[in-house]
Image (cartoon, rainbow, N blue to C red; front, side, top):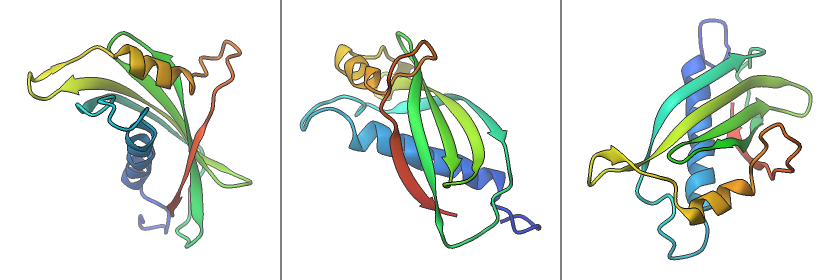
Amino acid sequence: MDAFGHVNNVVFIRYLEEARIDFMWRLAPGEGSASFSGGSVVARHEIDYVRPLVHRHAPVTVESWVTKIGAASMTIAYEIKDEDTVYVRASTVVVPYDFAQQRPRRITAEEKSFLREYLDDGAGNDAKQQEGAVAA
């Protein structure tokens, strides 16, 4: 919380991180798949703080979906909200990374197939949305 009892902006970034990790690890395709297992790095965050979120015990929902799939990056969009209010709209550019070779890597065909299920690029594609709850 900040001095006014609002959830601090850094905490919102943690909420986004939790949603992104859940999306990329728990939802990765197939048991035994190497998809998304090599690691990734954040290249960019963009966050619009729409309304302050006052500390409370009730959780908020984090919805996430994919807005762009490139050869070696993807963009994940989010809304942090409850039934009546959107508190944050955000996006993160994520780059798959090969830590053994210390360099970015391309997105595999299996990963692209998985990501396309959640793609909403504004062109009318129907995307699934991943939802998760975090305590405010």
